[in-house]
Image 1 (cartoon, rainbow, N blue to C red):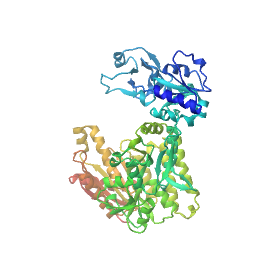
Image 2: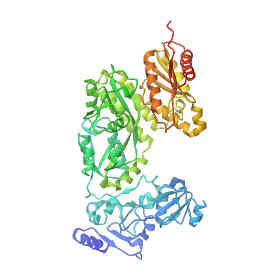
Image 3: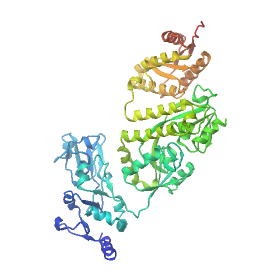
Image 4: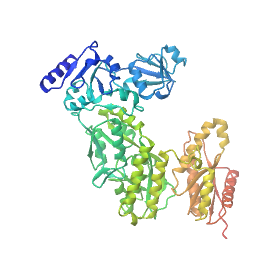
Length: 606
């Protein structure tokens, strides 16, 4: 410490920045903040909070204590025992209603207080408790640097001399009276950045619209806008580095030539060489095929084009290893491979598929499947930058639904003002709007839960009935009535929790093997309905047999699960009750015939 101070004083002699060390006996009111920085004992923090223009930076060690609590969130704490200054700083940052008390650890364990500050090791079991480490929130030092905020701003270019002491001016928390009392959960923490430190290299591929893209000569996109907001909240400096090859970016993260890439998802392979932030937004994967292709389920597809090393490739190979995957440069290249019959279908995150189809006027492709797989967008961080992870995660936690929806909706509107929009198929435009609008609604928590079966997350009976009636006004098709065999025995033998598990797994399996246009819902109990628009009787039977076989072969946690299925077809304008009755008769015969079978009853022609 003395060596650093000597160097500081020498620097002042040579370059003019005044930095002084004082003892705890020097009166605070005699310090001239307009012309000097002061290195003072941490005891001066109490006085600093009374002076609105002061900024402080810790330079010598961190607080290693913890707040142990029965509460899941710091905001829920009403009383805390034995809190020191560091614990109070953390609590006051997020909670104005708590009070400090004197109590023992046993008092706390007996629920007489909500929380307790502990400076040493925790000897008791913490299985049912929550631990908040002080050093994850603040650097709380033995000594601090204080100075007027205007003085610090004026001389920030000269303060790189402190870099010798753990980059403290780059990393340490700066507190003031304003921030100490008024910031909402840690969102307004200010970090004083060393202007001479290396900027973070943020690598992006500007050929993955609408996430990374050039519009009007400017790098933008959903992912880019999210990163800018996250970086602002995390108070990190960065520079974008553009690379057209995604595999090259992954390699640069792996070899630590790159610091960050903001728009990706975690895989087990990538976790070996990088850290991943929390998810900041999620989108489903979609599969696009030619109009002329017809698939009842994903397993029937022989070849799928997908971006090389894309997360979509990893997910699909894991769940559908028998499909041939055609490596592509990017999403657009994958779509062109489908258009040119080099692959039957293409897969990627839904907004990327729809944007590329829209902007490039690709006329002959349709969305065949919306998979149950979610693409969770995260920030990938090089393993040499572990300290960034907490900052970025905290910034993501402070993102509001309004901020998220604002970014997403911005890019739905951009599509509609493009000059070629009038020449596009209207269904593409409408579908993209619906997808983006749905995402916004979900983010704002206004989704209509009344349409969804709460347990299985598929359509409920009322919704199936309503949508099936609407469909009958427009076209014919096929319908499957599915009833899980011996389901009551499963509940009685293994309990309702295991029964719920079976219902959820069954629903997910069916949902991942139907078209986006199909209607799938829970009719009640262990009964389900699958409506197949524009599907004739023979193909409906084939679909039913394919599902029956998948259920029989699927591992439901070693439980022997099978399904009986009744099948029929229907014509435009037919009565819904009559159609359901025919399909239900098929289920009844399947059950009487020994279960685990498909029985069809074809509509009598008029």
